[in-house]
Image 1: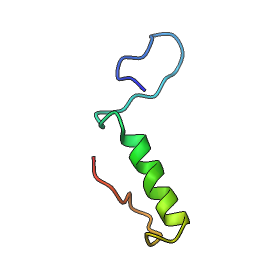
Image 2 (image 1 turned 180 degrees about the vertical axis):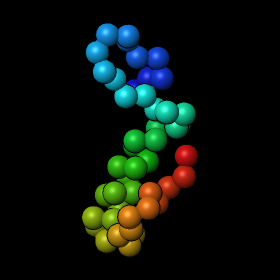
Image 3 (image 1 turned 90 degrees about the horizontal axis):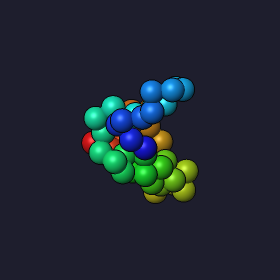
Image 4 (image 1 turned 60 degrees about the vertical axis):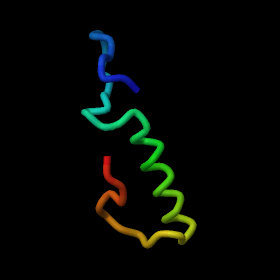
Amino acid sequence: MTDTPPVEGHFDTLEGMPSDWYLRLTREGIRMLRGRRPMSEPIPVRP
C-alpha cells in the first residue's frame, strides 16, 4: 500500500490511515470469526 500510487491505472491509497490499517482490520475480522469478539457492522478498531 502506498499514498503515492503510479499515475497510470487505478490504485487505492491508504486515505490517511496508518500503514498497518488493513492488517488491523484482518486481525479483528479473524477474532470475530473465531468468536473472540462479537460480530458487529461498525469497524471495531480505530486508526
